Length: 442
Ligand code: ATP
Ligand code: MG
Image (cartoon, rainbow, N blue to C red):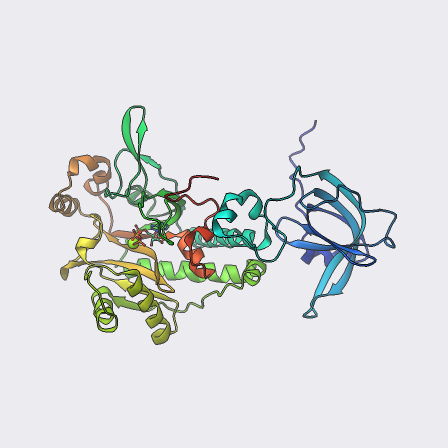
């Protein structure tokens, strides 16, 4: 065996077939479906990102469809590229089959039908058979879009001078404490799974000034809701030398614009397949929490919690932003201090409120962010006021003790964003292998 160091070439996409019209090429993939017609057959090959139409007819060559050319067999298809047109009159290329080499044959038929446009099973079944159901073109498009979101986040922030980091997920103390942290036994010690990279990303601000992380976080949510997972991907960033927390909201606006543009260009096929409505973003409107609350109380009945929003209120605010500003997004700012974590900077003009925000997308929270405390005394005092023991946070407080610039950041839930972009009712649709109160497999 000789290792040349040359990467194996990727497969041609059908968009590139144009350069090979009337020539023979070979592609590989899985048999997605075979549709027998009277004197020919459509053999649809599922390649890495699309399905390619191949046509079998006895007139094309001496090759005859073998018994083992079955759905989900892995094959290499050799054929002549011919140009045709789709229903809308766009040029589409197909292959006239000259040969099919079968590389592998499945042991059984798939447990659910995956080669119809829409999966016809319920969400639970779909997740039970994920290894198979993800092969359905629409299902896999969801996670290709999710790749695009992460890629957009990463590309934009990298261009803005951010450093990508990875912080530990096994920690001695829970970042924000509370009831929703998982604990586990670590060689006889009790440790926690990270519910957020918060404390670590802050520690990295005096190091790199701007950092981001895309990684799983763990929340021991005890409820079975349509918008909570127990493990989800958090897209976080933190930046130093901010003038105000508006800097963070502007950065997020820029990130989202970039992501949407990337989806519209480089993920067009998936966007079209899923009929995703990609939002147009110019600027994102802002409203103060207190004003938003007042409006909710006026418009909706039974509002009891004056310190936070019910899902019903978020939905109402989403509609309001759409009507008032034609915006799918709304920043809500200045949340109550008692409702925000210990590291949140209170508003010096009104200490009951914080320099923080949430971003609502189509009426549901997808981001929380804000300015953090950078002064050591201020942080220690706030911890004490909240009944926390600063000694437990010695490493974290080194950030403040040894000097930190004014800074802030945010956390954006990848599955939540995907869910609302694609119009799903359940966040599990936007999670490849969801972890929830009832599920840790597959
Ligand atoms: P919520 O109030 O919706 O439960 P939260 O305020 O507890 O969320 P944050 O700690 O602010 O959540 O997390 C930041 C973002 O992470 C949220 O805006 C959301 O997009 C996402 N997120 C939080 N919890 C979950 C979860 N359990 N499952 C999926 N995404 C989540
Ligand atoms: Mg939040």
